[in-house]
Length: 138
Image (cartoon, rainbow, N blue to C red; front, side):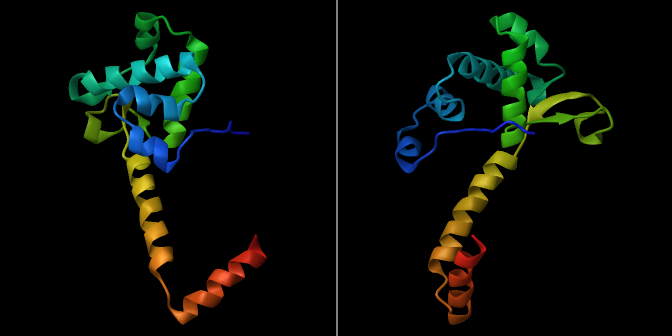
């Protein structure tokens, strides 16, 4: 079973985000060790050459993060679509194995906003019955 990926997100928290430290508190709520690990991976990847890291373990050693915490945060970042692992068969990354930023998280949030606007604005009669039928499926 895949562990749950809990994040605390609401419109007020989004409006108050002022920096990376606020962002990390939303992604890893209530766990200072995971927040530190997330921040370490994010910042190291951000400032790495070509935003590519061959391994994440040296980050844990450098910042004094336990291997277990690093693996938990790495898995969470991957499930959310913030980072992605590339294999040595990937031509785009020069046939190197390692970690890069992913666009999936950003695209997913954009798609969620688009879906909200789409369903809120659609007032066609054919759609009305489909919307009310959704209650039966839940």
